[in-house]
Length: 104
Length: 198
Image (cartoon, rainbow over all chains, first blue to last red; front, side, top):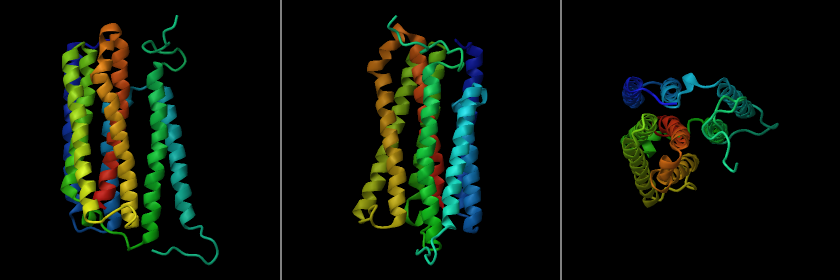
């Protein structure tokens, strides 16, 4: 499947725009981390920005927005099992044997 | 015929050429691998409570940010290398692939300096829980970078002759290694804030 020159120019423009966006978000991540905000808020903001950057890479560089249904299915399964794994870790934190506790 | 099927033409049932489906399955397994380690980080940190150092007190944020920019740029050069092949510009593709490799090597060199600085100050994985998970996460990521460099270098140099014999298949190979490379970049996009900024 060959791509016309016109399509390529607009594709490249899109990639460069995504590049600029990623750089701006990187600067934003570092800037926000220097603000005097609580750790919980810092975690939420940092991971949100990281998720946006990740989505930009996945949708544009990895062409996930125009992929086949089977790939989406595989990734949805992955996300489901990943979430299940996270929840297992999360719930195990509250599920200690009788009399034991976390020691920092 | 002895040729491997579906290296270019898509399979009827999947709608994809085999390598593309294969790499997405592999990346799914990598999500579970790094996901497990990120979960480890979360568990260790919540268990430590207030006794967890702020990333910036142990790691150098400007260096980490520089490495983030390096990897993001390498993702751009990687996708541009594939686009160049789609318009049959092999020369440009080779340049972008070479740049991707150089940027990857830059990342590794910077990481090596970071590690050696830690070791010089007697800071090892065994020194603290924070350093243990830091070295584990970044070490596994660095191994992925090294593996990626090996494959990229193969396609840039000896493997490039497939452009003459089977250009579409070669283009697909670059697309597939590109997907791997973007994933490695994606992992770092999460690693940097988690380890350096929080």
